[in-house]
Amino acid sequence: MSKYASNPDAIRALVRPEEVHRDVYTSPEVFRLEMRHLFANTWVYVGHASQIPEKGDYITTEIGDQPVLVVRHTDMSVHVLYNRCPHKGVKIASEACGNTGKFFRCPYHAWSFKTNGNLLAIPLKKGYENTGLENSEAVKGLAPVAHVKVYRDFIFARLNDAGESFEEFFGESLSSIDNMIDRSPEGKLVLEGAPLRYMHNCNWKMLVENQTDTCHPMVAHESSAGTAVSVWEKEQAKGGPKPMAVEVYAPFMAPYEFFEGMGIRVWPHGHGHTGVTTSIHADYSAVPGYFDQMVETYGEERARQILGENRHNTVYFPHIMVKGPIQTLRLFKPIAADKTLVESYTFRLVGAPDMLFERTLMYNRLINAPTSIVGHDDLEVYERAQKGLAADALEWVNVQRLYEPGEDHEETAIANGTSERQMRNQFAAWVHYMTLDMEEPARVEAAE
Amino acid sequence: MTTDTLTRLTPDTVTEADLTAFIYREARLLDELRYEDWLKLYTEDAHYWMPAEWQQTDPRLQASLMYEDMLLLRIRVERLAGARTFSQKPKSRAQHLLQAPQVDEMNPGANLFRTWTSFHYVETRGDEKEFFAGWAKHEIRVEEGALKIALKRVDLLNFDAPFGNIQLFM
Image 1 (cartoon, rainbow over the protein chains, first blue to last red):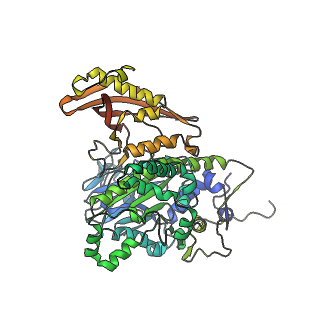
Image 2: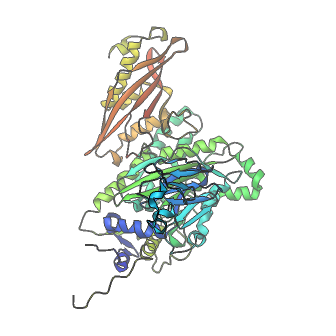
């Protein structure tokens, strides 16, 4: 029997101001409702325009559990279409990316579609004469996703009509994407390098919450970052500059005071970021020539402003994280209540020295790969959490750190960097977008 | 295997049989979890490389799963034994099944020897067991009378698939 479907009160009851019920992580029904409501009511990242530069280029991905393809049409516009032949249901494209030419052709019966989804041709069409095919869903072509927005080459889509405009949904949070782009001397990013793909046997929200959890690095990563620091200290006697890899690892061992001081900023609709004043990315060695390029493009004052913004992790609700100073984007793809595929993408700053992209790739493999020792630390605790939540003695998960009664998640605010306010902000948004289009239950007879 | 310490090799005296035995010995040290001994098989400027792209040519400006120098490998080995390395409670174990290594290059003049080895690899931890298949390419030199690995490149058959944790060495 369903407990949560069409029952917004039951959904609301899962989230209290300072704690959340374990069902948000473990219930298959809640997961299915997330796919139907949360991922349909929010603006979901589907890809980057640099992945589809030419006419006919496409990528395949999912919005929640909905298969979609993102394609560059012949007029260069970007379309997001359901990846499903309107005839028999076959996925039109199965590769992660490719070029389809001027049209998509279904491999089953050769129905073909323009790159904006419109039906182009059906073989042996006379067999449909006088059958009323023109009134069917099938003849309309590949179904388009209703709302698409390309913001400075970042492509977002929303399945449902309900909800805010793109600009209102993201608001000031777009400043983190802006900063990542502005770090290119040409104001342009190219998604480059294979994404690192890492399977996690845990709920997708654990990963999103971890992005602004600043009380775990010095504990969970003592084994990796702490060992990196201690091995480097022994090697230091040999002389030589501090290696790039040590610059990447060492800040994970910064003390609590560092993370308290760096601050957290929360925005409406579930977005937020750590690293308001500084971050673990602030002290990387300068790359020769880069600052001069930036000054040439932007002038010294603006260049300093762009490079002085060292935000740590920016969460775009519901499920991506962007690191402006290191040019990575992580996508936490929900597979099941207890299964999440993490894809970590890298961007090249167009026009900048290669060494910056080298650092981006190094960061990604040292921190985000299935072979990453930092990743091993994190996945271990997520999987233990997923298993531990089976304990019936306790049903609630605490998110109370630096909680202030009366927190308003509709406003922008800055808090102590070790606050769990962004986690609370995400859950406030979670309730909102889960219940936005959820029908109230049919009135139950009083006699029952 | 005692011949390794008794025989002082020079590039000119290296045989294909020496290279093959060396590749097997590396796999055995890994299967026996003898990581300190394993590290000694590598030159001080060595790299362990696991590409993330098909027919990858560049470890620095293309994505890799691993591209680690000796410092990073030592960090890994030390971490595996750490008291607070929770992802090793319980500990992982590994097993290699190697096809006979093929010698691709015998170049004593340049002190460079290349081998190609097809392998199956199993890593286990707790109740979980993961299977991997791929090809290992070794670049080997003679240093101080012994064979040493200057580069080990591990290309996984399904390098682009999502994996769970890979904590040990292939």
